[in-house]
Length: 210
Image (cartoon, rainbow, N blue to C red; front, side, top):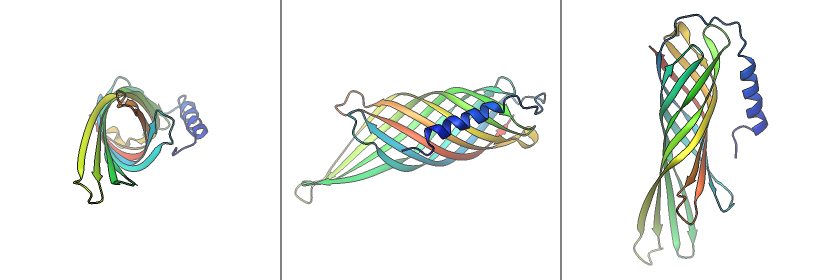
């Protein structure tokens, strides 16, 4: 499931790219560092490798990021993302079981800023992610036997990209609106049922430049 159709995503990227030749002012002093805090809603798709239909959940997201600005249009980007845990409940003839997945990621990549006016512009971010996924299962056997709970944790890599808009009044603070995609590859790859996790987010936030 996608928050935006693929063609719409490509069109947005194209439109952002076309803003690059803007005549916006670019000779102001470059603030070398920025720290941002953003939050929003995330659509999490869990896609098994055995081609079963994906399981989709809605979650909340909070992310902190730190940027080192190389020029007025290019910067290095790193940070941490916390996704609210998602829970699903299923049943069979023996009873019920509840599955909970908690996802944390760290990202490292680059950002290209595309000025539109002196204080307003668009940007594209992309790079790699390192994830930690914790899977917990709680079983209830309809009072036939005592309930049980178990969990496992996996670590791995993936990638991310994001497109958004930034408003930088006075070049000291900034406000952001962003579409973000993270793809976590081969989760629990050593198990009999590995899966991928894709996280599509709509987020807003603010940051400081110094």
